[in-house]
Amino acid sequence: MPLLSVSHLSLTLNAQQILKNVTFSVDQGEVVGLIGPNGSGKTTLFNVLSGFLKPTDGSIHLRDADITSVSPAQRAKLGIGRVFQNFGIFREMTLEENVLVALEALPKEQRMLLGNIKDVVKGTLDMVGLSQHAKKKAGSLSGGQMRLLEIARTLKSGKELFLLDEPTAGVSPKMTKQVAELIAELKKEGKTVLIIEHDLPFISQICDRVMVLDLGEVVLNGKPKEIKHDKKLQEIYFGADPTA
Amino acid sequence: MQLLINGLVAGSLAALMAGGLSLVYGVLGIFNLALGQLALVGGMTTWWLHQQMELPLMVSILGGLFVGGIVTWLTFEIAVAPFYRRDRFLPLVTTIAWSMILDALILLGFQEYPRSILTGSKHYVEMGSARFSLEQVCLVAATLIFVSGVAWMLHSTSFGRKIRATVQHADAARSLGISSSLLHRIVFIASGVLAACGGIYVGIDQNISPTLAFPITIKAYAALIAGGKDNFWGTIAAAYLIAMIEQLAVGTPWFFGQYISAGYQSSIALIFIIGVLLIRPSGLFSRTARTA
Image 1 (cartoon, helix red, strand yellow):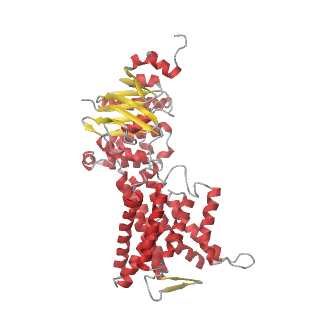
Image 2 (image 1 turned 90 degrees about the horizontal axis):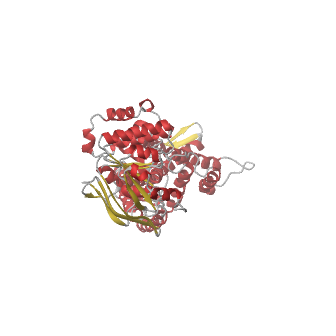
Image 3 (image 1 turned 180 degrees about the vertical axis):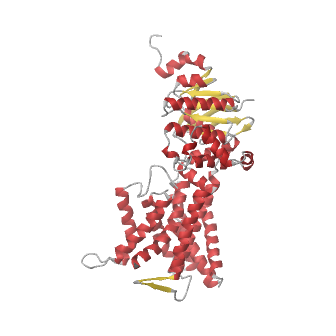
């Protein structure tokens, strides 16, 4: 059974259809890229998957549980983690507090399994090489460091499915490499990742599968190598070849 | 000296009221315009329990806070919860409507007479040229204890961290599993209890009457807006600053030894808001990030 099943999902906002009959599934441990031009509905799809927008039609299942009408906080408790395009960190809180608040939001029984919470906080910051900044405010970090902190925090708070919205946007090449390593780490731990990206080489390098969204519809779905050379992808990004 | 003491007393009242508003704005992103009426509910209930039912003062205060909390909860369920997720500006209208209903009920129950929770003369202390009552000392101390308590709660408890996280990035907080509906209710009710506390403060220091709701609300909002809306510490600082400016404005001779009439004192908060908004539209103490 797939970890995530999306079936005939549609969303209409202000009389405009943003998502049209979107259907796909993601297996446990898969890393799936979601690409498409600006305005194709990628972030809106993430907002629907994480519960911030209610679909007009269709359903979302996490394993066999129907989560279509479940709140974002409840979805997080069920194991869906979100990394935001505009940095979902708490800038006026220290790095330690950023991790701590994520752990404290876990259900009690899950929190008890973690053991000493201070050790988990330290381990999380160590994992991304940020422990020397533990007492600093998160707003003082660089874009790449913020991204690493957000991914590490989501990872340690026991999520199963990661929705990463442009994790390399505004990040230096060195940090992009670190983000890629962290995603590889997630995959190694059997986590499932759905990732929005514009950087096609990055997507080809880390993803098992790529889906292309255009005008709210999934128009391509396959392995990165297949998608990369598909004529439709060129058309979406560069327009139809008038000589063809 | 006397002006500074008066400013400290008035500022403490505004800080109590506006501190709660700041948390509500930071966490829910809404304005509650029934705040003054919630203060009256706390003050009038305490007066009734102490003066009419002859219960001890502390029991009456606890009763006032309890009833204030219950009415705030009703305010949330009736005038806020059904609307604020659709549009965060809807509660502006619905809480005004609710405040009118509360005004009418308070007038029905208590008529338009000023009520004093403590009757008889107060215990005054003279220090140099300044004069203040022991009751005022207790009220200022209670406010400082409250502000310190909120500081401790925000920075040293799991609940406080969740509030700060929600203020700074509501969506990220929700996506970590922080349940917003429970948090919103608790913060809103806490702000109403603080307003009730403010009403009791007025009832002990001076008199409380149904006409006070509007000026109380305006002063609290002046501090909130001047302080930076969701910046808790900025709001507290602005509450004291406005109170000091009000006292200095009417207590200092201007224009060749002439004083500004005390009747204009309340207008100074409004003039202050306009001045601040012209110079710094986001408030005196606002930062780029939302803070708590």
